[in-house]
Length: 379
Image 1: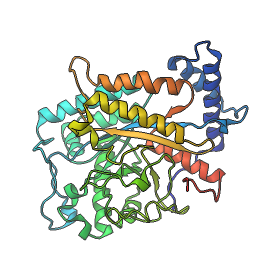
Image 2: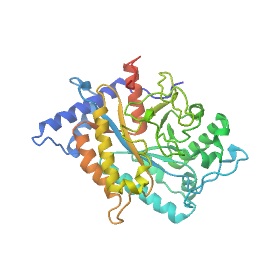
Image 3: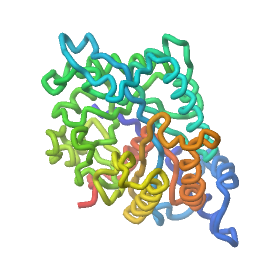
Image 4: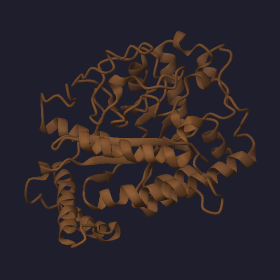
């Protein structure tokens, strides 16, 4: 049963109207650049009015954009629901969220980064798991609830070896489902949200989609082979789809095939020109933070060039708590500058629009409803 919510026609037209108004404002300026803080209020007024668009809204491709966050399972142990399992990847570095100093520093980092993104009128999809969630509950820390109240999406980042032990692929989908539900329950308790729809992780498990559907999840992304730290080329692009089945190692032939009745929407990360884009930031060969964000700029522009008018197009990248912190006096300056110099002008011109993962998936579901039988992915 498809769980993606269908956006109402009035809201769809309102969003389209906001885009048209944004583009019109951009064109009216002699310089061609309209500050985002001038565009946003006018666009909001149009959206609230619920007016249908005046003109052809499909004349220009729009790229939906966000930055997600992966909170790692630092200090985790396998769930008792997984049975008598051994091993589990608590942390490759020895870091542990049971260390209060580390937990509090990462909470501060998360708050700082989300405030920077809010300054640019954006929002994140923050993906959490134990022990971060359970420690937040134990400590009475409202970090996830505060992020949700500010408009950020709270989701699940699922490291299967951390929660299911050292041989998770040997376990049935029902066990995966039970442990995913356990993680989701703790996310809801820590954040106060009623619905958790998105997850990342478990990419190589052939029955992943069955487990996710059982757990009530219907949106997925951030696919990489954790053993190789690479993405398969067939999954790189800007057009979402509904996978026909799970992956079997690097055999993603079923996962990369669109099934219009599939229960899960997959959101590719964008039109990157290399398949190690998720791990290259940690490589000395990359050249540091500045070089990595230059690569992200080029990838964003490639994704804009690949976007199609009349279709849903997406681009996103992920970070971890404390990553790209840089100078403590100016934390996360490289991200702030990337948003100021690259993303903000594209938002002001109407070429890019901020959206959480659930908003991206809902836009795709609305497109499906309006375009029955149309293939969402380029052949």
